[in-house]
Length: 73
Ligand SMILES: [Zn+2]
Image 1 (cartoon, protein in one colour):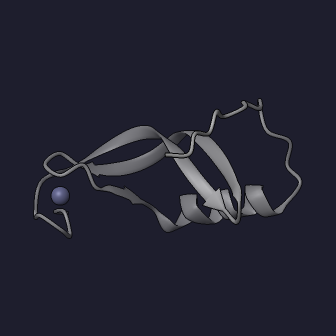
Image 2: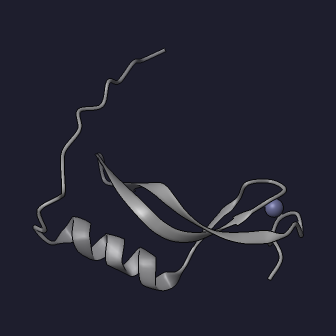
């Protein structure tokens, strides 16, 4: 498989993924993804996306919580 945008090579890698849901932000670690080695585009599989939606819509307890500093420019 090649990158949809630049036709570059795609490599499998586990990543940290930031998932936005409404006005909330969730961080998923160790997400299996495919990354373009040329432009850096990230491709997530439908199974992983479904799992993340499941976690954020159910009341699954997260491993830990962080507070995120927010600045307005
Ligand atoms: Zn690419």
